[in-house]
Amino acid sequence: MNEILHDKEFNSFREIIYTEAGIRLNDHKKALVQARLARRLRLLGLATYAQYHAYLVSRFDQEKVHFINAITTNKTEFFRENKHFEYMKTVALPQIERSSPDEIRIWSAGCSTGEEPYTIAITMLEYFGARKAPGIKILATDIDTQVLEKAQKGLYSEDQVGAMPAALIKKYFSPGMEGRDAVYEVKDEVKKLVFFRHLNLRMEEYPMQKQFDIIFCRNVIIYFDKVMQAGVFRRFYSFLKDSGFLMIGHSENISNISNDFMLIGNTIYKKVV
Image (cartoon, rainbow, N blue to C red; front, side, top):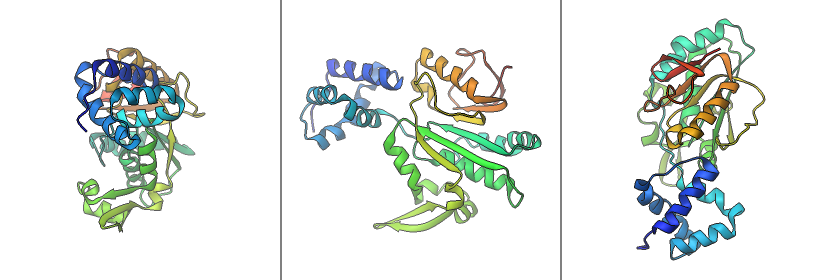
């Protein structure tokens, strides 16, 4: 397919992605959008991006999910930015446990294909070991419905699990085959701790009923403009317990966006109360 994405359609596509998902795409993202949408054009049998734009507009409620899925970025890996999981084990979980909670609630916002929430679950299981743990609930949300489907299956290639210690792979994954490919499936004891849900962070109100002890939102807000970022952090503030912890990505910063959080570690924050 040699069709070029012209500025007219690109500008319209990025306005739509901002309105629907809060993601601001700059001029340098044109090639990325062209590449991401090319597969959708082929699937629909469309020859030009102008034709796809007309298709999207005419069937917006049905097509917008596929459009958002195509545009959003889903880079992740097990134990990515491991300092956060080490902090969980050595600082956050001991503090939370001392309050004798009936339940520990953690939110992985922008969970992508599931590596982050499953890593959180494994960290929790490793921390408590044979000790009796409180109820553990890990909410994993993403705007992309396709990655959520993949995450729920919990199937990963050798390359995807390969960076983990062999002992953890053996303990928490079952080897198998998918067609001719070797795969590792997350074991049920890990899966049962994680609940996957579709959620758009740009929503003014989130549907959760209870607050969280820890919120992970890493390498997500970097795609939002400051207005959108401020709104997300405002909502995180209301959903984080006063004693809770917020973990963001290594290249992200709250200080110039919100005064509601104070830095206590490397991209680790607590609420200002």
